[in-house]
Image (tube, one colour):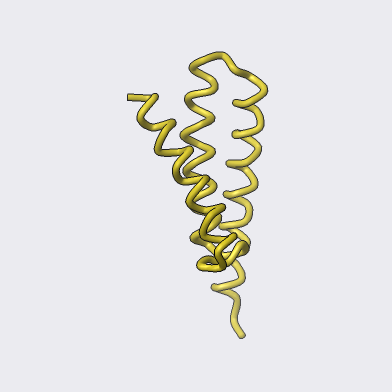
Length: 81
């Protein structure tokens, strides 16, 4: 099951990159951040299970960045104009 999750995570990261590269999604938008967050979370779980600690660490940092960016986007959206 974790392998399937990891493949889905890899797909999410590749999809995010492809959509931004083709200018179908903004690189600073919530959709991009969410795809990256979910993809890195899935790959991080798989990397930790495999004891691939450098990859697990990179993906954990990627998750933190994604969460921070989503929080920033939400705060900007909720800020009164």
